[in-house]
Image (cartoon, rainbow, N blue to C red; front, side):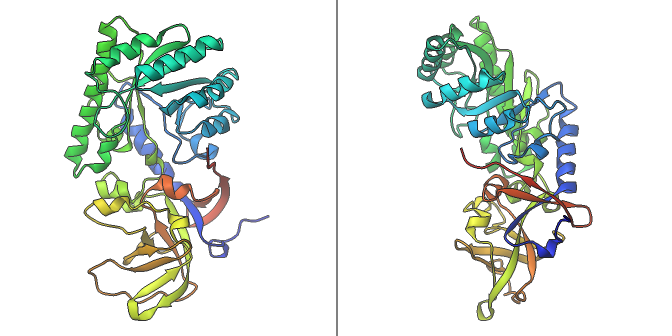
Length: 378
């Protein structure tokens, strides 16, 4: 059966521009080729085997996941080198063990001696030796142990025995998302590198192994100028990009590969509003651009070829209704006719994609080529 034409799709629908996606993949690959590092793409954004197959030279990986549900999904499709990059919890160790006994090289992360003891004890009690990386806090953004903290060595020692193997250190420069310029991103990339390398050196000086030194965020991966001491880079949203990345200057809006197709279902002419059938259940509640110089509301409105429409954004959203209008402070726009179809670029590709179960893949010429299933949930 032939694929429907774009205007026959029921909306809202998640569109994936294949050519833009491949351009983004090639850009990251080219950027990292100048460094002698491995690449472990983060698949939490795409959660789709057809996309992930394009990210690694080897079908077995390596990849990074954010849920064990993702690990199950990709394991069933032949991926066997996986980093679970969320601090491990006791109630997940049996699941980790199950995957490892299926032949998966599954590593976990933690950031405290308490967690390290828990993991090692579980391994000893169950005849398992877990591969563990210590999460390093290089930017005071989220989780992790600071590179200079005395506890780092204590954690390493808890992992250097029966039940657990210390594989190295990893970090995520999440504060790169708050940078205001390319120079700030470059500085954050160096801060990320220097912090995690310092942690690795401290572990080695204490006589502990540290073969893996892993860094990662899309902004720092694309702007790093020095990766000395790093063994691998992780990044995920670069595959699709989004409005937050565009607001950082990391990409252009015409490089954003993901969009939500919506249809005009009504108008509020006196207010300059167009009502579409894509609310926050389609776009997500993410308002990441509100902290940036240009607030894109709930998404930037484009025509069906992905070209922005006169500065229209989704200024507000209810569960199934999006309110499209000119940016605050701009002249009111003429509402679009009922039945008009648009594409809305998302603030956060991960959050928007998570609202859908499949991608409608666009080939060059805006032709619907096929449908790719994606994974959701835990």
